[in-house]
Image (tube, rainbow, N blue to C red; front, side, top):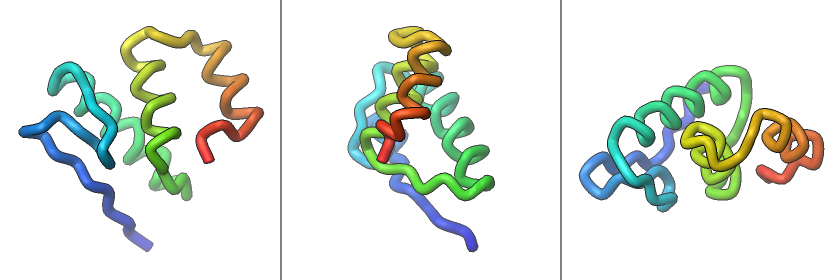
Length: 73
């Protein structure tokens, strides 16, 4: 089944999560789309985690810890 998420390019938000620039928003949207294809159902917290990984705020190791803790749900 195909699910949509709210992406607002003019306000630089995905599901209300703010982005600093369009490139980061689009990179995060692409990552979300790939994960959604595999069954991931994003919520704001998960989008924040992916955004923070994309911009380098958290490392791959930290991302894996969040995933194991299911911090994105």
